[in-house]
Image (cartoon, rainbow, N blue to C red):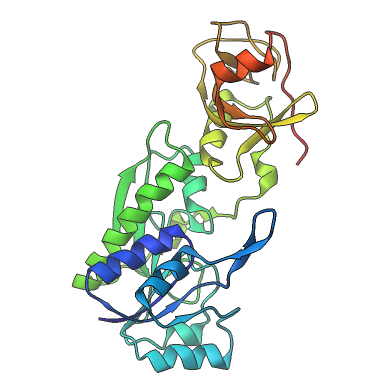
Length: 308
């Protein structure tokens, strides 16, 4: 099948690789422009661009698809379908109508649950038992198109957003190949069941120790690897990368509880949180026992709320 592929990060790159392996004819690959990254602000190509360059595909990086030039580019490809995965730019209605079979999106949730930019993190934050991937026929709405194919997967009890992302990327790649192979009949979404997965703001990742320990544990998982759940210890911003609800421990919110040597248990509004991995500014991620050996945090010390 003649395909246009539009995507940017690793989630999309895995799907592109699967389409290549399946023997589809990638007549055009579209990705976002290179972005400045790191302290030196060096321009870095997207993961999709790296694959496209290695395969010597026709590659374009428009700033927007809302131009006559973009429409002409898509039309000239004469594609059967356009596959979209984490592209990062909106597709206008006139672009959606150009390919013979329209545009198909690989979305990392079981639509209509978690429409929007951050379905993986929002599913974890909500404590969902499962999520999945949906192959959707795109329309002018925000993830409102008909469902062609969907597959569910359980969310692990301690699974982070990064770990779930990687599993869903592989599942999405498998599913788009299957959808193109069979082109199943579309099924309308039930809009009454829709929830919205808003983009993650860094300010959300600030831990408020007055919250329930179970909710804070969800935050730690949902914000790993980005932006990282953060709190304060004295004047330092501490990132907590792994944690779980503690079996015991009590005290004022944010206070380190007495417990087994080498463990870090912090009291919350309800219950307590056992921190398993954390990081100081400029330091490495450390297991709690290693961190404590070098920092001497005693019971009664208090963690606070970091400034956004």
